Image (cartoon, rainbow, N blue to C red; front, side, top):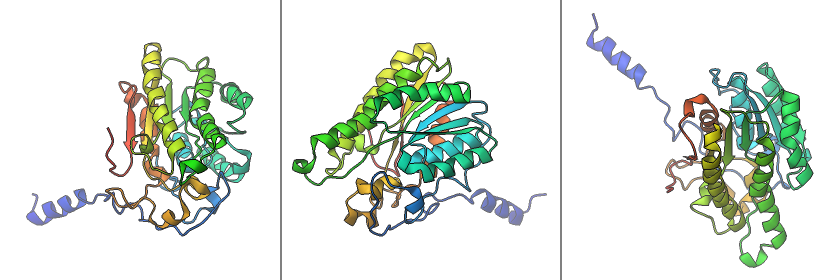
Length: 307
């Protein structure tokens, strides 16, 4: 027989939930500077990519993924999650990020999956044209493409924003998506998934991130248009729009240095997000669980208002 005391204990157990406000610590990063592109290994405080916390359930068993910018930040968290869900994973990254990439590849391999590193620069058209072919050859196929790599440099005044920076930001953030996705299509089978990383900046641009925010809005349009084009072929295209997430982008001139101590404090949850908090969104969009989700942008931003 259930007594009032045992029922109360049961309810308490049921109500032992993670409070999203306190699930991860509210960080106040010290002012710091890294040369672009920045390393997770030198980030203070360290970011949580799910190294010890993400638990997979086999939702991507046998899948083969390419993640650009997979060495650090959001891409690293997605790579770890994909491997723990059963996928083989190739990550593209800049040669300067080799230290971070080696760590992520070792974590992929620790799950008994194949981990491949593909160093290069997305400003190099030959490199980005060859990525999909290299992955398909090394992994024996390709059925998940995550276009995640990005360039973000904060500039206070438009007068100081050079055409060179604008061109490089557009090349890396959006034009590379065209090149890589175009090359990947000859490998992607029915049931494949393409996931593009956009940003809350697409809807609520910071005045110091004019070029970055413009590319993120373009990514939204690219995602929705391509989704309609590829849906009849059984290839789903979706996006994820992160809010303020603690990654090396922020300390390698992605934010004004004096803003780092309060980074992410302005969202309703009151704190910056950690890369691991993005990983489930990418896993969902890559898996068959989202089979009727096409052209969607999932906003993972701590409560910031979006259209």
